[in-house]
Structures are given as structure tokens and as C-alpha cells.
Amino acid sequence: MRKTPRHLAEVKVDYRSVGRFITDYSQNVSTGGLFIKTSAPLGIGERVRIRLTLPDGEAPFALDGVVRWVADRHGDHPAGMGVEFLDFDEEARRRVEALVEAQDP
Image 1 (cartoon, rainbow, N blue to C red):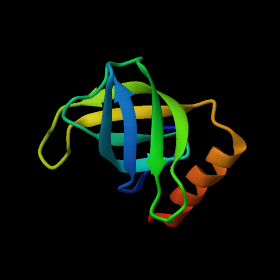
Image 2 (image 1 turned 45 degrees about the vertical axis):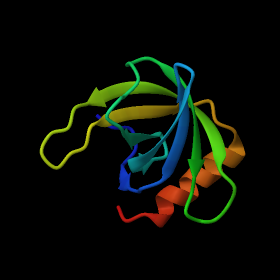
Image 3 (image 1 turned 60 degrees about the vertical axis):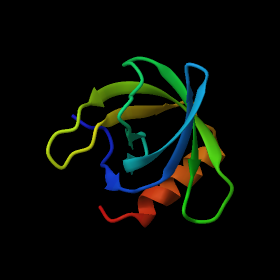
Image 4 (image 1 turned 90 degrees about the vertical axis):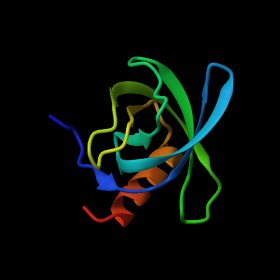
């Protein structure tokens, strides 16, 4: 069972993988994590440092996360990976909560 509800949100997400810098977009977000649309997901359990660029115009901010699940493209659902946020500071928590509150449930 999901701990926090998801909200549709297309947010620019930058992260590193095997020496590469990757830019993708989220499909949805919650206060506990997000789903990143990508055809080349990282492995389950892999830790990742992500940088979110929010549509509010504020500077991007970074969060640590871990890949909890991956999905292949299925019908209208894109391929990608579910990332759970880990150990984020109060400023990052405030910005994620503001993003979630701004989205339609």
C-alpha cells in the first residue's frame, strides 16, 4: 500500500548514472517520491542523487533517493522508475510539499 498519494506533475529531473548526466521528466510526485519517465531505468535498490527543477521559477534543488521499482512501457503508461526520497532537509521537504499541494489530486 502506498504511504502518500501521487499527484500528476511533469517536473524536470536531472541525475547521474554510470558516469552519465541524464535529464528526464517525472510523471507524478508525492511527498515520499516520484516516478521518472525513462527508457533506461536504473536498477532496483540503486541510490541516486536527483535535482528537481520546479515550475515555480526557483532554483533547482537536490534530493537523495533510491529506486524502488521499474516499469516497462504498457499501453498509455510510460517506461520508467519509481524513486523514494531519502534523508532530505527541511528546505527540500518544504519545496516538495509545495509542489505536491500545487497539483490536482
